Length: 509
Image (cartoon, rainbow, N blue to C red; front, top):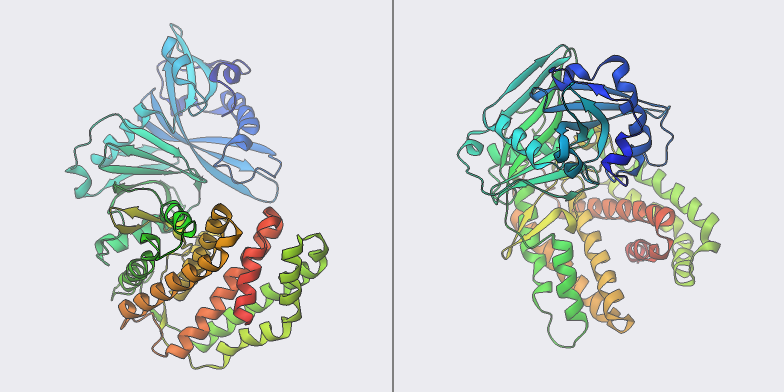
């Protein structure tokens, strides 16, 4: 947080611990100071998902103590008038001089505390090494903590218990909605800040791929921390995975090599070779998600004409709405984007007709679980190979939407669009003269990706048996993804809107 522990805590009444658990202390009127602090501090957090909304109130509820009087987990229910969002708050009591050292921007203080003999601070300890060590110990021993509101469950796998970690736990940096903690080079614990009741896709898919799909190109699932409230669906709070040594995500890894390639003449270097291997790993992931199973959440279902009709209607509505918006705002676009917008707007009827193509075809293949938010940033470059991560789906969608079965070709479309963005980013670094070479790279890496994907996806029950139908369905998803990107760029980065607009234009051609 952008204020120090001292500045934050000094504004609120002191809380009395008196030898009780933190959970017992966090009750009634004592919560008001913390809740008032959270109203001001939450909007400053990267992981807070409602920065543009007004917080009406915050209600803090304890889930249970890990170490009585030392570490506890709590949730904050944030009332935004139109909805209530729930967030995880790991809390720790720190005392004396150590309190001032441990209350930092990443471990902010929420209140002053005392037990009669000493004073200290109550901190948000998500990134605190001592809290991280307590979480791992509880997970390794399958601890359960009962409270009036439910049970805090630490559900570790045998593979977790045989690992010996070295060195202090370290936070790897705040992600958009999570915080990852590394334990040596063996374990990653991902804390989910934004909470939703129900099965968490990141955990559900990772567990299935590890234990039923036997997919080796994703971190092994090692366990889950969840809260089982009375009369409520369980809520995932954190998940543990095997640590994978890597050189960063594939986006950063690829952009570095591509920028070098575009700055010189001659054959492309390693940046062009990613397509075939990534296509193979993507196909292997989809085959693992389509294995025979008794798990209804993962069983492949036949793709029907009704499924196609729904998808076509959905994409048609999104396209018409976006084109109307584009027409109304074209005058505010940069000149290059205006020219692309005019070309796309002139092809509206052709575009809508193109969407309808797949609706008249006999469907084949099936609906399965997929990655759901697949792009180069969701893949790690790991010692000459690729490791696929983060199966949460699009964060702004509901759990029901993120758990829905779909065609694996949605993921294929996401990766192809990511290649387009990579090519444009490479040109921005190498200069406009590299455009033709970047187009050549994009075409080659996309073709290699698709060729390898088709070769390795063969016989998967989720993949269409009719290649013409597969191509038409791919076009539908590619257009939907590009249309979404146009809307996103219009709202957030107007100078980038020509990237997805050129993608729509390419589909028209």
